Length: 99
Length: 390
Image (tube, rainbow over the protein chains, first blue to last red):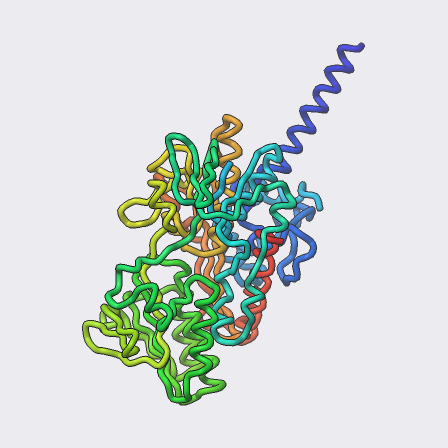
């Protein structure tokens, strides 16, 4: 019983460590976004923040930008540089970031 | 970790390293206590913005536990892994990030040196030179000629000379409408060229003349006392001369042995590790980053990728192949913005464009779209300076 509890505790610790690693190390492309999409709340800009947003919303926006279905200035040109998998990873990473 | 240079590349990298691994000891070596940003400094030249809006301090970096060493790096010993400072101190490192930006090739243009820059400012490092050029334009009589001399590639901020021409033209049109602006170019093509030229035709008809390399645009010598610029074809008299000299990686890059015969620094595109010296990474304007331009956005993006690679290497891991973005806005007038964007990835040891992505604003965009891009440009500056210094 004790061994089982220990194992469960260990698995939780590993899971948390993995989640932290996912939150910390940005997937390819993600770290460039914050050049325009502010990480901090305090910045005055018309560009929306990505931190803590629903990953599905980020993904849907990127897919629409790429297809030219959503009007934009630079996002249509940038979204074309990313695959579905890359977009999904970037969206998940920003969704996992906390203020 | 030691980072040399507190600009968009170096300051970003120091903060990103500390964030990725708070236990890392990070020292930032920077000669100046105040950073003066180049992006938007063309607005200062044209009297549209004050220099103070370009200036940032390093207090927030210190607050995050980054050791700030306000000294000049004078030498690097790659084998002994140490940086020698002007103060006489020696900083040991496991890995070094070199982010010195640019320096000028003072020997490249006959007649033009540091003394000549007091008569014919370059204003290509923001600060006193920016204000000198601004004062000269403000003092120029109506009907005068402003000449901008532009070097061959590569140089810091490829569209910068043409944005500068635009905003100076805006000032001339408003305050000195009989004046002219002449661009003497050592190139036959330039960044966002069609967008600039169609904007000039619409906003400043007849005011800006661009002379390309093939039309005799390359300046071969200058005479600051006579205020003349000479090309293979003609000698041009200027009332205000803005000479943008040829450039190279910041001096310390050469001293550290990370610059090659071009004067710039070859790097591995995954980790930004120098291909010439061990345990040294080069980011920002100093690096040969393939298709990525020498912009503040690119420097910031490279710095974050480099930091992640360094953190991985220090942990004994292999850095993952990155993707990077560049976005660069130019203003043709305070309410008229254009942009270029690109996405890059390593292929065969070089950073290349991701095919099908990137490009410029449309040539036929509405006035509203241009105004929106001008607002986005301002937002970008606030965002990036907030991330790097705020």
